[in-house]
Image (cartoon, rainbow, N blue to C red; front, top):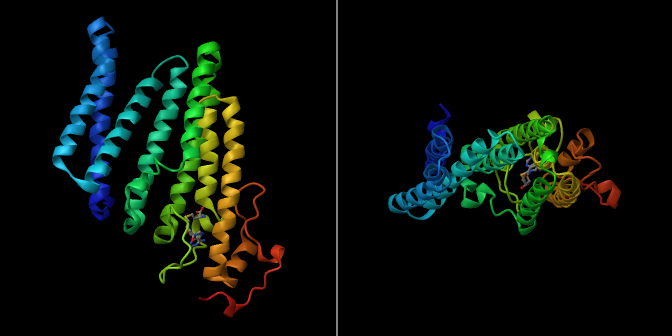
Length: 300
Ligand code: SAH
């Protein structure tokens, strides 16, 4: 099976995510199953925190360096994933926050595992993309604040569950499309745009890359909007759509500039046949900028 081809760090990530999910899901639900008496309330809400300290201690004892960094992050994402499952069982606005937490935890964990499976050479702790950028962090916190303020003042606003489920479907579709891109491009995929062409870098035009030129960005774009529909956050839906669109417009432009230097006319042909996949984003089209494309022009 696939686990045989997973690199050691990928195996550690899978193992600790699952162990952590098992421990914390049991821990969160045990309180609600047993009833919320005052001591059990303590068990439900402080139990997981204590278990996490214990788990962190065990991991610190078992591993050092990279393996520790990977295991502690995976265990933490298992904790937040379990918290999401617990909250999603509520019958009020916390349910949508739980669904969002599940989506967010799974996304960051699956990014790491996908890189471990498709391109282990590039695997680092950054493959979790938990520290994507300051803007990404600020956007996440802003969405929690919007959810919190609206839930506090208009709790019924967060109970349009069917709208939230549409957001969940959008996130699942975006996630699948992104991962399909990673598994199609394999070693040609990279979390950081490459400015120097490696000798084995090949232009990928098959599979999801025959539908659009930037399937992983398309997936991430709709996933990010989907998270805000899941949270039933009207303000952040708009902010996320605009911010993601601007981010990907810049990113695609810079990336295509490098892809044109890497693959020259081959990439120009690809651009003619296949669109970017992102609404109103053209990418870097040489004709529009008056650049000449010649075979000998692109190799350096
Ligand atoms: N933009 C693509 C890939 C993102 S990963 C997508 O959305 O799926 C970023 C890296 O992919 C960059 O370093 C770039 O050089 C490489 N890349 C982008 N499109 C590619 C393609 N069609 N074939 C090969 N490499 C590609």
